[in-house]
Image 1 (cartoon, rainbow, N blue to C red):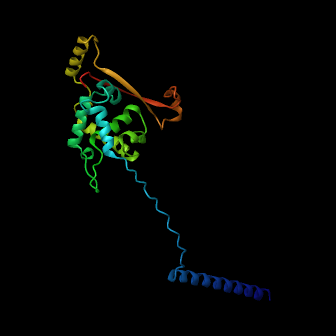
Image 2 (image 1 turned 30 degrees about the vertical axis):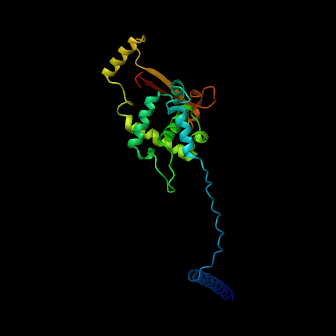
Image 3 (image 1 turned 90 degrees about the vertical axis):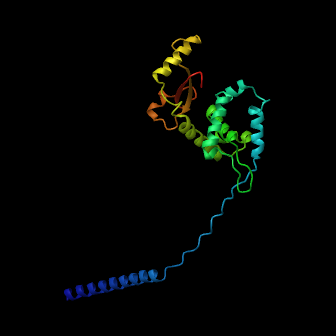
Length: 233
């Protein structure tokens, strides 16, 4: 009697399990044949890019009248201070970039309007490096957006290295050193090979253990970049 009762309940459990398994299998099969319709998500609103008419031509005219016209507003001494180089050297760099790097060549856009001039692009890069300013700090004067300013800086640095690196951005040869030493002694500075300049750049990803060694009064770790230039540069 006990054996019969035990087998009876086993049969009932097997039947229930088989029935549940069949229901699940049928449901999965139906979902594969007729997948349920998912509710459609409302499309995200597209963000419209704000267009700002910056009057690029006016920005170029102001820059030209301030520094490059015959009767420029600012003297060569002020130019040297703000551009960190003399005007002939800057003009030489601008001419090489305009002639050999397509990015710095002035073109017309799809509407026929002239784009940024070579002077505007190069001045943007120089100002950002000379003053360590943000990319959007030159917008009001030079008339270009933040993303364009960053692009100008990137292309300027890469192009200067490619065009002038082999001639200027190199170690001096023995003959160069002797020429510089002779020139320094003639000018009253014996044993001098050039003028040194340095700049503190913030070290954003400085290891925590090293921050104390590279922190000055600003409270932020910085790296000192040094460069030595001869007087003919």
